[in-house]
Length: 116
Length: 112
Image (tube, rainbow over all chains, first blue to last red; front, side):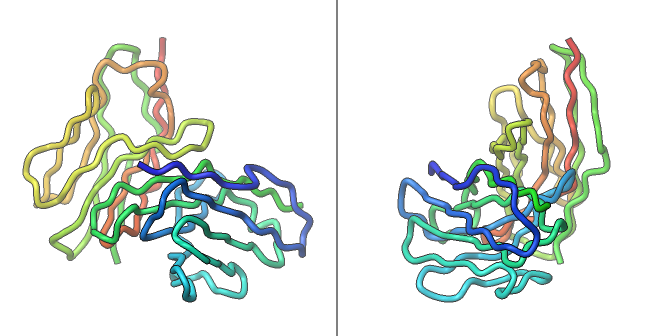
């Protein structure tokens, strides 16, 4: 298993500002992902964070809005840029310990952002 | 594209009784994995059970079991002897290549 810590756990942000969320894993993992959960809705994959290269974004998500870094095998950041109230969501970091298919995917506790 | 459908927005069960949550999915892949996750009010996503599509045997984890019907693309979750702590949002998820596609979720309420 993997223990995942996210910071901040919760924040209230001003419209037009940017916020960076950190994700730290207690062991080296092959794959890291970022998901968004809008209020009352399900989880949607934003991107796969690739170590040492640009993240791979899903349809509807772009690097300018959600820049992602992954400098090593245990750490990643997601920035939510130029925030608007529509960005109010829970953002969740998740990991797949190995590169094989069928991993159990572990989640962090989420970062609950409210944009005012 | 893969899709996951949970047709029950909300379910209720009496404590100690059994409840079944429904899930169907659509995919053209033959090798994939299915999961049920639980999300309590704390928002932490907790893995309940995992099923490998190439295995015919239904997965079980204590009071939790699945009914996996591959041909029908159905993956229901049965919770036996329901407890108050089972109250949560339950998400069905499909995985191919470790990317998860989630259903809309089912809120499970447990009555004492």
